[in-house]
Image (cartoon, rainbow, N blue to C red; front, side, top):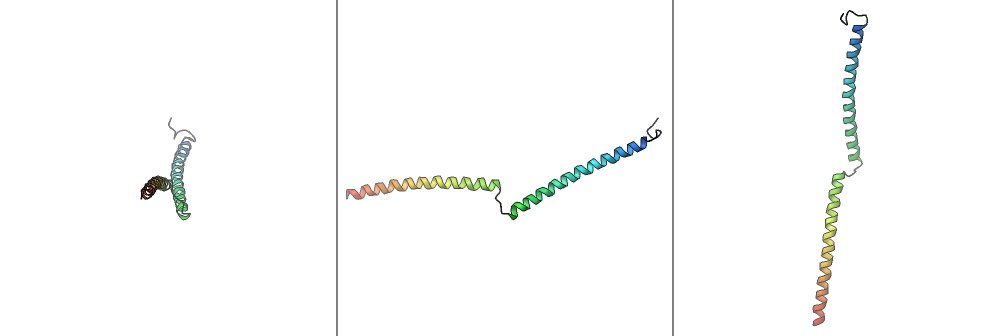
Length: 91
């Protein structure tokens, strides 16, 4: 006996196909909603002029390097001033 021979057999097949199609459409809808949410979040970040993490980390690394160089230059200047003071004291 085939499903077409049973009462309601065809109905269950049709419902099964309909449910499968609905699940496929729901999956596509979910992906569309996620993409739209990402786009809106990116737009909001740009509108609020928020800094992205990668940019923040890059600027922080540049600032740390500049501070280290500034401290080295300050120490070098102090040593040169001490040396100059010592030379002027000899004269």
